[in-house]
Length: 174
Image 1 (spheres, rainbow, N blue to C red):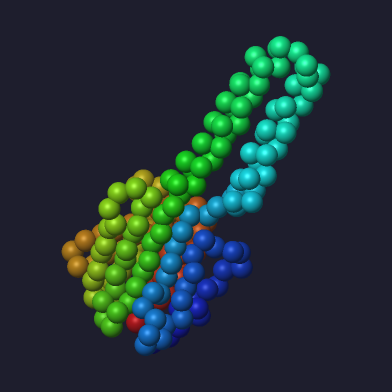
Image 2 (cartoon, one colour):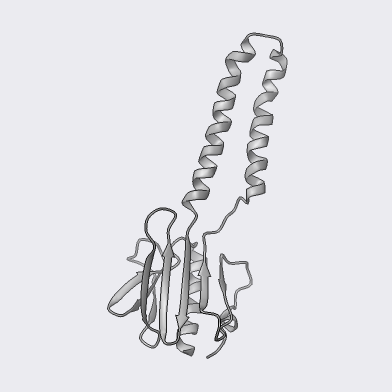
């Protein structure tokens, strides 16, 4: 049994991680959506929107007009915060590919809804790359136990190509 880290031929930081296999470690691959805006950037963006939104109000200090415009600026900042927060919650997805003996299990934890799980014998598992015809270009699926499931559909097209190569190498080594 080889370590999956030997399959990491990528040179860019990918939103998934291979875990070295050992008798006490079952998780082989963990996937998550890429976050282009970290939480610190989120806070900085909302603060910047508020700060820049209040700049036009400085000339209105001491005026009644200030109180007429301020609620709209606060509404825009609140809408920005809500939209970014909703984006974070919608992207709270996690997929784990685990190996326990000869059983390969894929667990998909969506942001909302029940957790989905698929398993099969690792020697019958097959990874496929659907260049066309899928819901996304270069769509990656795992097939086995009479079922086909998607893996990494939230990744970018280039990331799915690299994931396919690494999964294919991992399954061929088993």
